[in-house]
Length: 426
Figure 1 (spheres, rainbow, N blue to C red):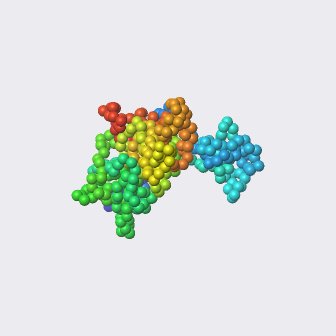
Figure 2: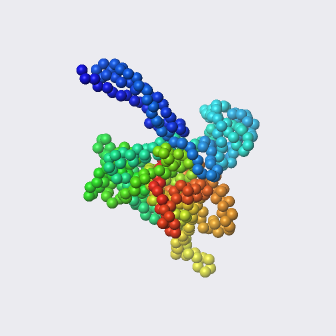
Figure 3: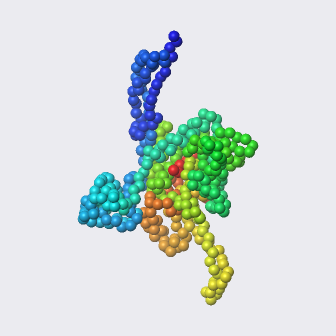
């Protein structure tokens, strides 16, 4: 009887170790007709780490695991309501977590945290804190998913493109529907996908989203996206080809739940975490403010300063200071430094300030001090209009050193990155 052999190898695709790992793998050769083991062979296989830590940013990095409070809260010398009060927290100030422990039960909750705060160590009950953390491994998995998406697309000769639906400002149709993912149609295109039961449903794909063109025809394209196994039908002419000659080797990964971001650079086929920072992302207020869109995006351009315009109708005054029924439209401007545009009017940028506030502060030093005070809100809650804010110093690092720009755009107010940079929002 002709013998047929099967080689069975079971390994993990990625390791969380910060170095390459060489491991011996036992291969069992078995005959199909009676599964008899013929031989054991040891070989060496190289497993790439999920990511490496190689920090390039020279500024102060935030805590990677921290708490904050929404009001002043007591820190005690033991995990008990009877513990002596050592001090009180300040709203939104980050608190270093040392240990999660059990203590006195308060409202059916016995979880306390041992913390380091203002040069002393104490205990605070979990009911009065909000916990945040950097999920670097999860961020790296998102980066790897993009790698696999690109590889699959190239293997199938599918063109990798991005959605083009950018218009200055943010708007959407009145009473526009919300898709099953909770997305609104602002600066997005409509796509249709089919469920297993045959239902055809709407999903908005935001400007800047990375897609792969699976099938083309004169009416619509069928595309795939990195964060879904579904295929989507979209109108033709809504995408633009990405130059993938050198692939994508730079990624900014934004974690909306924890309000922070990790910056990754690929070297020798390994994603390196080179920086991380706290952020504030967009909040959906169902009217004028939009949530930062989730997905895989390609940076479109950068600007040294993002300008925001708000309009307000006010009653006109006559020479006597009296008002009448006539209105005038007042425009107010706010500005944020170091804008990196990734989806529609959505930028990653520094702390914004209105022109009125700058005039009120009076000088550059006062403006800088104000921005430094505003940093305390980073890493807490969503509160911006679609954009992602980070500290001025870290944003300067992203703008100049990480994203960079093609030298031929040096003298323009907007610039194109010198190579592909992806932004992943989850």
